[in-house]
Amino acid sequence: MPPESQTADTGRVEPIFKDGKFANPFPSKPVKMNPWKGIKIHLSENGITRPPQPLPADAVDVKKAYPEEQTGLYVTWLGHSSFLMQIDGVRILIDPVFSNNISPVPLLGVKRFQKEIPVKLEELPFIDAVFISHNHRDHLERQTITELAPNVGFFLVPMGVAKILKEWEIDSAQIREYNWWQEASIKGMSGQMLKFACTPARHFSGRSLTDWNKTLWASWVFIGSKHRVFYSGDTSYNFHFKQIGYHYGPFDLVLMENGQYSIHWPDYHIMPEDGVKAFIELRGKYMLPVHWGSFNLSIHDWWEPIERASKAAQENDVNLLTPRVGQTLSIDENPQTSPWWRTFIPLK
Image (tube, rainbow, N blue to C red; front, side, top):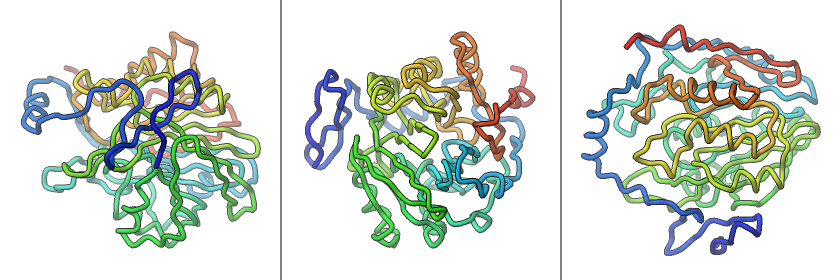
């Protein structure tokens, strides 16, 4: 089992594991929101939580997303926290959710802002590895995982999540699970190597009312032959960003959570301005905000996270990338993006 929490000055903060559950080593208030209180909060807030019409999505050019080159960094945002990425010849998928509704009760619905995801699973080539940050339904979706499995080398997950995949009949030979700060490498079909590290996040886990915090949550570091990438997973702000930046930075690209936050759960999702602060501590070159633009899981205006992040980035001279859903960026080619979402912001 993971060791007890260490102090911050060790530079290796660890998750706490006790009585069969994980806990944040950072000071945090437990999330214990009564469902009726949650409904009351949603009804009392005035946020426009969905766009007035479906948001656009570019059809993914798979050959551009996963080119033949053995070097280079290519990233394709699929909405929310799902990404296609090729790092120096190794093809990965991050938190893939291809369904249009992530609610456990479909009739209630947590529906995608786009009409559909911009690429079909059957259009994808063989994927060397799928990385999962934690077990929440907007990051780990059964149908996507089971349909992907025959075309994937490995599923790389935080501690405890392997059990879920095995229950879904994923071959145990495909699954590897990790604690914070564990490092490993995979060899892609291209013959290129990708080193990675499971790193801290400040969040929680659970897919029902009875399994909270029985599996770990994490961020991920990816180190190719020429490029380094950090993915925050779901997290709030704390000193772990400085630790990760110290041990693994600088990064060519940082995929930073940005959205689904609230003053009602400040210890579990990062505020946009703190995301920019964390990016600076990570020593990143480009910041790409994630966890917004496809699903409504909070009570803020749907466009608020990206507007706040854009303002904070400008004030701090941060290179912010805001691709359209489905757009592939080559990070080595001075990528250019635009504030495409502003066309769809309604007048209040």
